[in-house]
Image 1 (tube, rainbow, N blue to C red):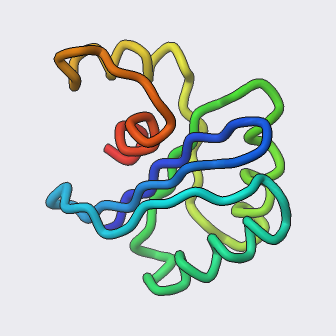
Image 2: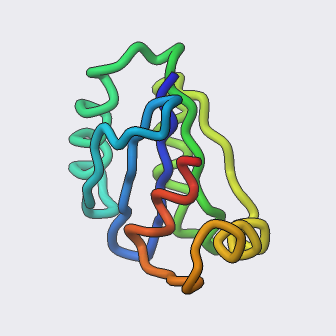
Length: 109
């Protein structure tokens, strides 16, 4: 299995891919537009869709376009409550650090 965490902001999104052993497979950042979505889709196509689980944080309205795109392309996508992610961050990081790269990794867990 592959677990993909996505942290979405107004103009971009960060992603982090890891396998079931928590080994990093890939990560990066794309613009929050159709070009970014299709480039990200090409990366995901390296894997079997049935082996990918995607999680993304609910971020006002910013996550909705990417979420819709991924659903239309038959990915298993889940929206994560930001309050749950905040509490999970506290349990996983000693310094309670927060940035887009860290958040995308935490979401993938």
